[in-house]
Image (cartoon, rainbow, N blue to C red; front, top):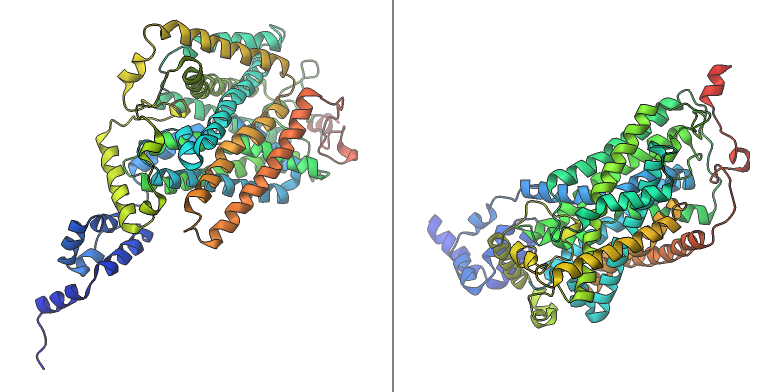
Length: 556
């Protein structure tokens, strides 16, 4: 029997391959992260071209790199936006709940926030090109209700967190310069120093400033943990927390504050040349941040136990009379000053940046500025069925990739860009602040900052409760509840049951805990108790007694 030549065998093989086979093969390749294969089948013409190509050549297509330079840039953007003041409460979470429960809680919150962040990326991939901001995404997914929920929660986020910054900044400055001014005066002075930057009409945080702010937090954490470990050297077994539900649940607010990243992802994704890679970028970055959180919290807890009530910086500050910290050791004043200064650096940079989306939203609502150049988001609404097939999904991916490459991408994206509808057109953005709007926007921003200062002065003695309130309420809604709800709504018919169950579980658990912690922390804000227990997370034996006093031990 005559054996067919190589060319005949290939021709026979090509004739046996159908369009359905190639579409199925494209789906398989997309799971293997081989983007070139998906693009081969995006149109009928390219399918015919693929039919004439050798299947062996298709299978031999090179795999995409796991992490590219552009991915690293996006990861750097995200890391700088997430790693902030929430880290100061990480040791306190272990003191509240103990190491076992705290690790479980941290793992759950890491999963919830990573899944929520990836959910935003996945929904953005399905959305039409007119969807640019977080509010646009909410309207595309849930109509006007979705936009209102997105905008209100984002507005609250961008106003509450600066209040936390002002309260913490006033406390830090009062500690750095004891007796110079009161904490109230320091809050006002800090707001005045940040005011000129806040009035810059088109604030753009540079990569250098973002890196400086992020490094300020990292250096503060390192110094704080090092001072604690050195001061508590030679300690005996640490005291365990006296667990109760209210105490353990309180860790939810700080964890939500520490992880909150949802509002910056739409701006990051629409600047990436290949948006399909963003879920991986977000997952890797948030996992790295979780590892750093775990190292920070477990290291400090190993020396302190339940005797840290919240902020790490408060635990290393010496008393003006005794020179000792609340934990009974004499900290190095120079190291304390450095830790406070580096955290103040982060606060000063982040304050103006995180306020910018709130300014944009207020200017849009009050002054009628920043209207989307697209007539209506719903005019470009895609039918979900049209984007659920591999071929159409590939066409959309190809279109997005081409559009993104053609646009002028910024070198750095920050929280300040969340509501910027002119992200790729700085001239159009600057034009909105000329003419009659020039005075109006200044007055509006000054009014907003004045309200924040008044609120911060009123709440200046309740930093922990304010931080927990912000994390449990608006940040939880922004970073977890809304993104997962959007994803469930858009992909419910095609989402497998093994993904639906954990997604719904995360939404229900975070909603219940968020409501509970919002209520308890809000109650403490506006109706504080008179409890002055030094170490409220400990058993009665150690509630008001330092378990290990290094100074007393060595003086004797």
